[in-house]
Length: 138
Image (cartoon, rainbow, N blue to C red; front, side, top):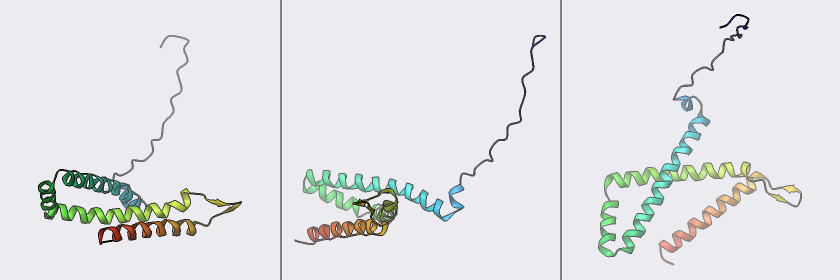
């Protein structure tokens, strides 16, 4: 430092406390948030699984039978069971967030959140009924 220069002031900085890697285990809502984020991996698995199914069907009966044999293995059955449970969790938490994310109005009146939620569940039930009807024989 040359003569005549003023020494800059040094301030003590207070660093925020370190956050644990397992911060999400401290509260139920945080845990549910992380589980919902994790459920996206299982949603992606189901998309990949269905695309593999479509490919197997398009390649003929032998490929389809091979896919069915692979699907019947214990690891794939367990993965699909866990994926199904996460898919249900993902859907329920998505529907739960919908009334807060979607502000619907009829005229000047806001539609109550429970009506939006009921509409989502009714749509889910209708889509499920249609798929069951198609799969079990129309």
